[in-house]
Amino acid sequence: MLFMFLCLHIVVQVVSGAKLAPPENIHVEKGLLKWTSASQDRNITYTVQYRSFDNEMWTDVPGCAQTLFHFCNVTVTKAESPHGCVMLRVQAKRGELTSRPVKACSRQGDSCTPEFSVTARPGSLTVHLSRNHSMALEHGDHAKHRVYYGKEGESLQLKHKDGASSVLIHNLEQGQRYCVMVQYIYYNNAIGLGSCIQCIVIPVSENVPKDVIVAVGFVIFMVFLLPAAYILIFQHRRIKQWLRPPYQMSDVLIQPFPEHHILWSSSSPNEERYDVISSIITEGSRKE
Image (tube, rainbow, N blue to C red; front, top):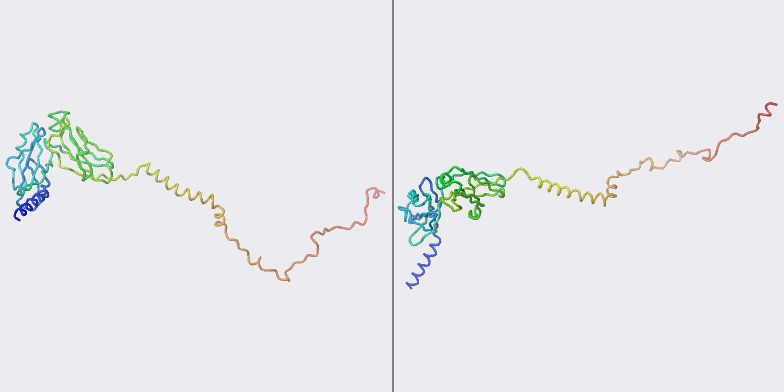
């Protein structure tokens, strides 16, 4: 019985461990790494780790292993990388349960993270970046910016665009919210802490494209033209009947004439008037 209880307790711990919430809002600001707890449990401790970009091994930051605080001074990690830039992550722990580690981002531009701003126009957004940064001064054109972008909620690792300065991204859906994250790259390899994600809504254009106007106008024209043509061709007689004014005979013409109003003619319409000739005198007889 005791053995079954212990087994059940271990299973509950394993299942609960998978549900231990990781820390949130992990960001670096002026050399200080900060985060917030996803739980109200005060028994949760946190471990901050770092690694350089040419090394896959994570190492605990001195003074920030199994700490109860929600911050850690990470300036000591700059000496651990050839470029002075490292990746950072934080992991929560409660007893034997651990959360998944979450990588940090940088809210301010510095020698390891680009400083940028984002503006949007209908169908596109622009990530404004400066060419004059410490990476470019040290490595020239081999150091560039990599802009990761995507719709809000999507993984930003699926799409990216590189540029030495500002980056313009086209063919975006209007009315949708897009997010970007920027990181330095050196010889096409990521270096430096990535920026924290910034999101912006792509505005909807107020000007309707000409092809849309033409298409809508053509559809409206056809909608009215086809019924009108059918009516004029096949129903023209009925239209004439509808347009013909009603015929009304005057009451005077309908009523019969009284008997004393009947007109009689003394002469026949075919009778011709003439004079009776009694004698004919010629010119010769008159001279005699």
